[in-house]
Image (cartoon, rainbow, N blue to C red):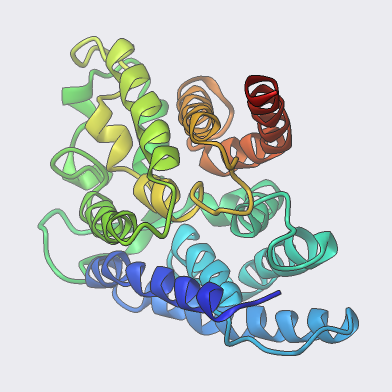
Length: 311
């Protein structure tokens, strides 16, 4: 059941995404707005169709479908082909949300299911990103496309960190060019949500802690075998977007404080493992989905422990 409190929280979360969106628009021009122009009407239309098919009250004002749309549009490369966005929205709204019973009943984060679906189905479409100009400035997008910095860093063929770290290759000061500042925007919005006590900060902290500690262990100062510094992992791709707006989805993470730490640590660990040794340059979506699958078990274990302690 959608309450006024749920609606207020969802729209506050949507507003907290705006700083990151504005930064990305500063660097990529209208690319992310174009994503939203396709994702938003498709997502809302699918939401209405699903609600009607399930005999539920038809409304999109609760903000949940908009949140899923925003996260997906921001996770995908700017100017993603429309059919790819539509399939991602189909996976998110229909498969991950309504087939599990709708808002509050989904087992897996809808946005990550939609993203993983198109990542596996259309890897080339998600691997090519517009190249930013070497100077830091507004909308300095090259007409060509190239690999993400995570891809370039992972497959650098024996080069040291210093040798590969060039603006022309998409690198900024400490992370991906443009994305290091966008992650700052998502961090700002996420900290606001933490301050308002609208999200479980332990989940985000656990993810970032695991990712940072593992990066320290495998950084080795920047040799050809280095896995990248903590700042590189925190400020490249959509790490802060995931930490504060994806893994903190209250429906798909555990309820107990201790299990929330474990959940976040699991997401961060899996993300680092996939980024470093897996087949995909980034593993956030897969890490979140696997951790979501563990949530019922974590809830069960800690409920049983509480029952034994109070019994």
